[in-house]
Amino acid sequence: QVQLMESGGGSVQAGESLRLSCVASGGTTGGNSMAWFRQAPGKEREGVASIIEGSPSYADSVKGRFTIAKDNAKNTLYLEMSSLKPEDTAKYYCAAANGRRTFCRGGYCFPSLKGADFDHWGQGIQVTVSS
Image 1 (cartoon, rainbow, N blue to C red):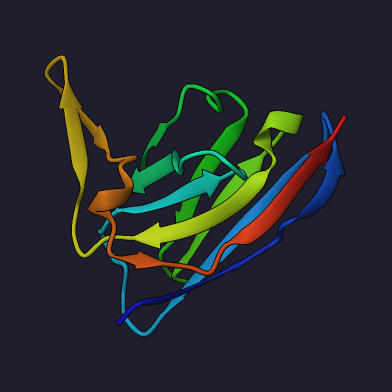
Image 2: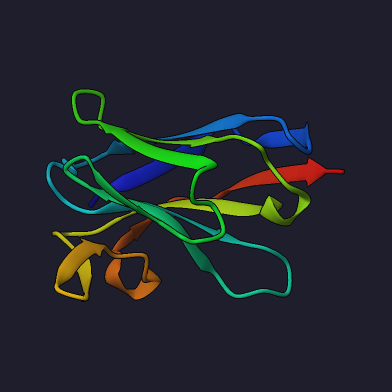
């Protein structure tokens, strides 16, 4: 059973940066899908960024500002967040799948950002961005 532990959250001002980390233990995540999700109070959970073997996908709301990366040697997933906005305030969750999860559009396939595709979840970590 894969266990996920997030770290790196906190409170920042708009325009600042944060890096979230997620360490996986209890199993290898190898070439499987991993992703970051977030949920703000009163809103549905949103897929933020996902990655499979170095290939990422991003929600439109974070493209150009967030970068997802994975260090397989350390079994650690990262989310580098820059130019943060108050609307990025949410609890952020790391997730891992028991395989490769993709969605296909226009003849191309991308790492999934759908929560139902993921099998293991971290406890979440708060990110608060003030204006």
